[in-house]
Length: 154
Image (tube, rainbow, N blue to C red):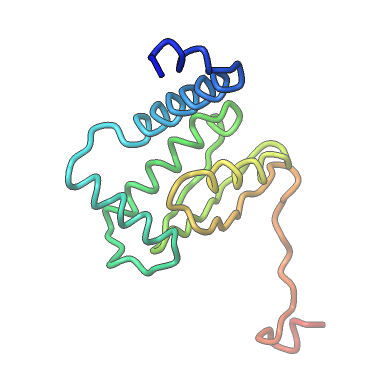
């Protein structure tokens, strides 16, 4: 069989499969370049540690630097949002990717929006969303509990 005979055996579906494969390859390459950037030993080790965390294996340790980096990524994600970027949202990061949001927002729909934005950040495992809505969440009256003296319970 000559080279020309092989070319004539290509069908439209074969070409379509090759084109789709090339397109997916380019898209994945672009995504990988955005996520990875410059590759060095430190970044590879960090990626392996993140992979271990996602797969349920405990990481070797959680450093203060890890918390600061995660906090910076969460704050960047909130600032990039058109609505949340104008709100005073405080972020606190705990060991293991637990992120607490506190502060006030202007509308009730912004509370779950902030949670979704933060959950989309890599390495965030849990979001403790303690955001309050200005005007809707006023001061909460104290409720008598088991540690309140009997005279105060009424």
